[in-house]
Image 1 (cartoon, rainbow, N blue to C red):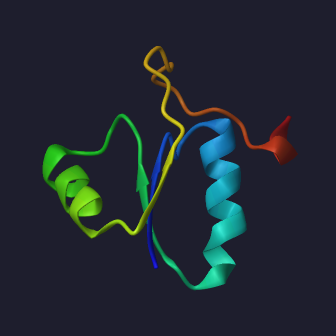
Image 2 (cartoon, helix red, strand yellow):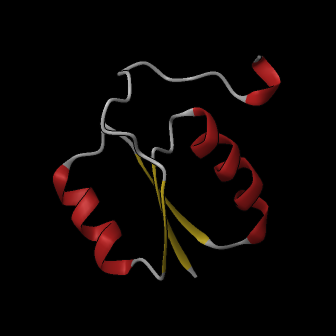
Length: 68
């Protein structure tokens, strides 16, 4: 399964990625630094989308739960 995760650099997105990595699914992490061609490819291939991006999200990465 191809899984698209928006907000992948933020707290919830990073922890979701860490949880899904061992499952063997193809993960498409997307954040504010993702370029349009990569985003278009991820959307076109996604079987599932976790939309976690906030419109007012800060530009810097958030710490993981372990770092808090």
